[in-house]
Image: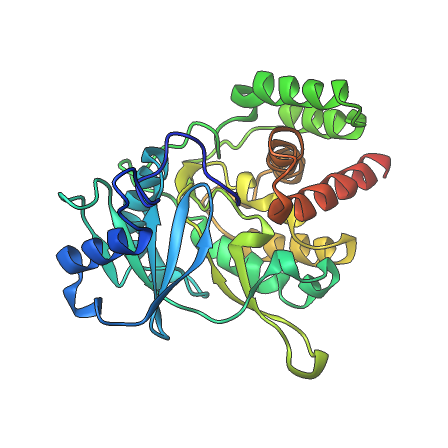
Length: 321
């Protein structure tokens, strides 16, 4: 999310003694990556979870702003180097995996900077050109995970475990005047659908459009998927969590393309994907969960409201037909 962070952060804000944000960044680099200290630097994003600082032309420093986010950074540092070689798109493998120290209490990363735009800033209709590549990336990711893979209690778990939380959230939305009837119907359909019955697979966990980097097409040509960002919710579980992207990212036309591409890619596999009749009902329910978390609980989050509102409109269309 964007905007000022909650009150439990402040590690990389100016403190009461007048220590500037840049001084904190300089101390982190001096102790953990001294070879990068002299590169020009500028803040390019300052959200609830992370501070992003460009380092020269090719690198970006990501400093977590709260303990929960620091845990996610550690997950990325541990597992992305393992997963990246098998994926057909770029992922933010750390160039420097910074460790906690006296100048900063949490892990931090230096990543390669990639030019492009997040898909959430582009018209949903433009995703049709590249959603087959997203389907291929997710199909490649959705392989059985080892026993030591991280567990995420709010993503990729059986939907029944999230039923109370999501229903309470939708009820709060209803009390604020939102029409949640379609969302409730789709959520209930997903909870009632056949569950994922095979071994847990790797799941990105947060496949919304602002976590997908695209290269805009030249001269209004087709966009191209470039990278999957923000792997902090990486876990093992039900792949339908990631397939929420069918409603989070494209319009109805693109969704048809995405669904067909993914089904074709996993249809002949022997790891449980070929026999998963509840896949798309669960995926739609996960889309309800992700979009409603923004619309109901973070309504002022302008960066994410765009895709969240559009998703709930797509969900309403699905419930009608």
